[in-house]
Image (tube, rainbow, N blue to C red; front, side, top):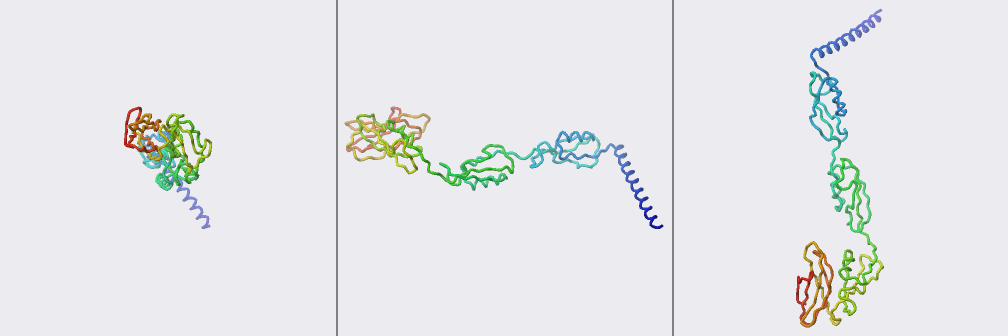
Length: 313
């Protein structure tokens, strides 16, 4: 009999608790309704338009307190709200929202030409993601230099963006073919080959060709050129062949914008000989092998027919 009493008391107590809880909720609702207070809903994780709609349904307004970058929450979504969800606020109160601007974005710096160690430091500083390295030989890039990268310079990137680096294993011997320079003016011939090679120029007097024309070349046209290939060009000169001693003459073309026609003349009291003619670029360095005269001679340089330099030779 006592067991039934215990069970009865438990059921009665539970019933009374439910009644009291319901009554408490009803009284709270009445109090809220009478005082005009509303519960603040949760809007974190919603986009701004949805958050505004949810708040308006509770007769609440919102203001944007700040917009900040966030690595995970997309742009335009609510990151934080003040006050927190569940708090009581008067109707038409303003809820402060912090909105995401999305992940931080910035421009990829130019890493081309720098060493791989410096590139890795820069990538770590920017908090970029996984780095993939591709290594190969290159005609000009030094060992360990960055040839190119993805994303490229100036492209918009985010933190943790993956990066691919193309890294040089050093230069390789490029195989080119000797161009046909026969009949070319020495100035044009030098322009064709001196970007890769420094040719040796030998002068020979000629009554058939004008001065400064290539009449012989080693290697022959079409033969392979390597990094250690010696190129010898034989160029006509109006100077007599009996000169045996040659010296190097160097002239630095003044800076400027336009190319000029350069003429080098060797003259004495008896004769005047054109040693070399050709087009030259601003700031270009011209080197010529010129025979020494037995008597007193003067070497003169002309640019566009104006004398710009002279010296005893």
